[in-house]
Length: 371
Image 1 (cartoon, rainbow, N blue to C red):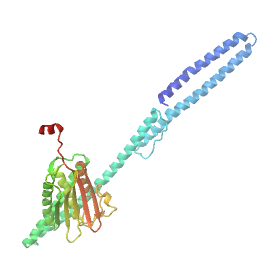
Image 2 (tube, rainbow, N blue to C red):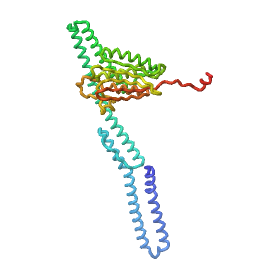
Image 3 (cartoon, helix red, strand yellow):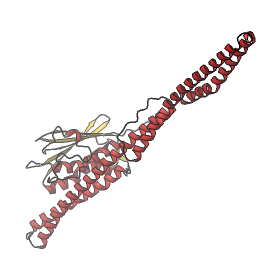
Image 4 (cartoon, one colour):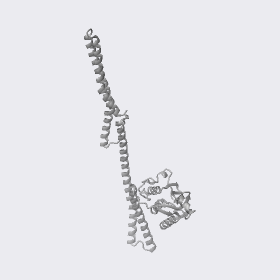
């Protein structure tokens, strides 16, 4: 029952019941006195007094019952609400506000409980974000220190004349260049990660020819792979006229992040990465395969989660900020695509993602004009 209805009932009872009772007593007493006052005067007065006392007691109990009813409906949930407010004020969110009333105050308590749940979720999310940020800083610091140490070592070798031959000098310079690229990639990931959290990723979509674009990407990646001593294979099974709508820079980031992640775990004497572009109906599918150490089945469902690392040891030579594949997933999903992975331990890993083809929409009036 609504609180407004309860208050109206209480008001009517408190206001009308005494009046009705007095009117009834007055009427009955008057009628009785008119008929029998001469014979039973004392008895009449006693009966009227008893009726008044009985009526007063009845009104008292009814009013007490109504007071308890209103108290249970209003004051008790308000007391619980006040206690809950004090707990939130003191920073305690681990409680439950149980109110069974279905009136306005019950609805208020339900809204308060929903607010408490959201506050608790936000507080827990903030704690998780703080932990993630601390882990990110730790990962980036570790992974920046490794290439910086290597660069300093090679530069000191050049300064001390250790790189005495042109071949050795060229090797030192190439290594320094690769380490500097690793540092640049880490810093770029960190910058992009901050844009993800604020939903300010700078997308610039345009029509992209699939064959030409991925051929250029593979040639660019191939130069870096060759300098690292790895082999890159590129296989295109898509017609030359297939087009997608994409941000060329962000899809290139996807390719680079996937390949960089693969390179970290290439453990064979001859590291091989293959890129395949396939036509799968309304989509084109990109597959990036490596012959690395593979991913355990228990880790595979989580590799796109932020900060997830299959190798949790910070002494790992592979390093990694733990956000590369989460960035990849975000970009692909923002393009309306999907990404997933398959892997076999000791054999290698395949990353798959799909992008929808662009198709021109021909209106009926244009068709009629052509005819």
